[in-house]
Length: 486
Ligand SMILES: NC(=O)c1ccc[n+]([C@@H]2O[C@H](COP(=O)([O-])OP(=O)(O)OC[C@H]3O[C@@H](n4cnc5c(N)ncnc54)[C@H](O)[C@@H]3O)[C@@H](O)[C@H]2O)c1
Ligand SMILES: N/C(=C/C=C/C=O)C(=O)O
Image (cartoon, rainbow, N blue to C red):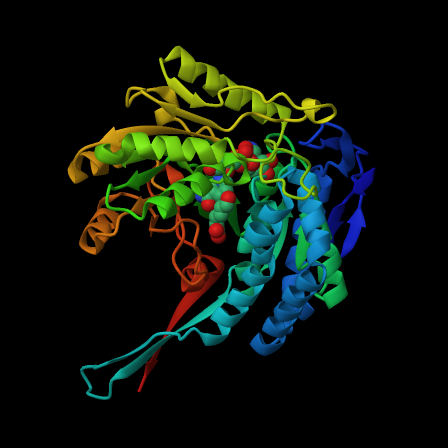
């Protein structure tokens, strides 16, 4: 069984309290790791190590030296690609193909793109006239914000953690990472990479543990933290924002969603079916950008539902490393209970269960894992709980619509505003609808296509701020304007 420790000041260490917790495999519920639970002492040591690194060698590096080290981190991640794939499969139970093609490649990319960004971004300057006619020159400079707390979710742990650590380090900050208690492995592995590259001690720290009254809360409340970047549930964001208020720390939040898929009758049918299938069932539906509400133009509704059903019923359950497996379990028994409660609520609210709706009949030991059937519903009213609330599972509700105005109003009838995926071959309509759905990210004839230079984030209850490209620099640096009288 793996022993996973905290990573503080370049060293792996247990917690003074001796507290540890178990990680169970989502595949078959066997215990696969024992993890040190960081207490206030470990969190304080990590924040202090991060502060001291800012003032030490890391803070003295030139931009060229710092970015060169981050390119080497990306190279090391690529060299140890299989180790990261294996660790994330162990943590999440998701199929090998999902790891190798969707999530793990983003680890190296998240370091490379921000090393490129900080090297190529221009700072602004303005010349101004003055009463004496000699004028003045204004120019801005950027400096690191300081110690950044990075609090991460379990659904794409390595992608989402490096999506924050990459820009934070590229901008010269230091970080203390709190991975989800469900997925501790890849954050620990990245500590090995940081040491092998020679990243100065204290630049990258990891405190393992839970949220409330554990490492997460101790970190976000720590007054040595200058800013908090968080990805997780909206209600957790509320708790973290309250902690951030003490000491007036800046926050960047990527939160929940209840995203709409909009399919017009003129779409490329096969592409739309495949796109909605991926957006609803990739990673067993545990993707914040995933689609849980599907709206299909009425003339195509029945044909679309049957085609989506066929794809869902063709998934292959199994262990992540087994050849041909395309579908994995949910992250935990607790999350499985939550998703199954929505499966029951859908039935209680009168849904037609097109496929799924329960637990698959799998042989031991998989029968002990956190498995649920991928599920499609139709026939629910627009105010049903599975239409309004984020489930974060392998399920979607499909509803017909008749007009563009109707479907835009349906898509916007949510407190969230993260993303949407629109399928049509009418270009004018594609741009029009993409501009009317109130989200942070709109995909047209595509889904989860990511250019890391673009602004990424959610509106409404789906987040605060944007990260990506130069937008990350706004959060991870302090900008200073210098005005020089000429
Ligand atoms: N918008 C995005 O880009 C995005 C991406 C991925 C996931 N998500 C969202 O994340 C959620 C799933 O992830 P999750 O279940 O891990 O979320 P979660 O909010 O339960 O936990 C996220 C992290 O916060 C920590 N935490 C919990 N309570 C805390 C507290 N009071 N103080 C400090 N830390 C605390 C947890 O230990 C974990 O590390 C879904 O809602 C999903 O939509 C959003
Ligand atoms: N922040 C991002 C979200 C990914 C979500 C995957 O579950 C990304 O793609 O950068």
